[in-house]
Image (cartoon, rainbow, N blue to C red):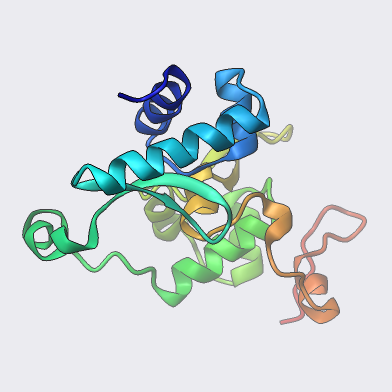
Length: 187
């Protein structure tokens, strides 16, 4: 039988349904770092030794989550495999990078940087929950300001926006705003 601490960690990981690092688990459970470490090891061992369909996985970024055991992949693929190609187009990736590096940003500002209308792509990125409305700009019409979501960070393996690769000086100039608040575009 699992200890109370292991049960708490197990429940939090299940309810949150996303990978969490040990620091976040401490915050959410009130356990100290040693208690979290011991509970995670206990869970790892229990899931491995008792033949569950899930295992506790530590990811490269030191977060933890439950994942199906590899032996079940073929059985689960038909029901849970990708039914639709969910890859992002080049235009969607371009738009997503603009939002990530320039947030908060309006759709009009995105359009200005890209040089084309981005309505459809912004809608797609919102539908897939990679970006979200983070506020309204204090100008006439109060357009939505967009920023990246937790799902974006998770799926791209980032702890925070600061983990994004640094822009070169030339790329940075493309995203900078001039004194009048207009976005610089060298086209």
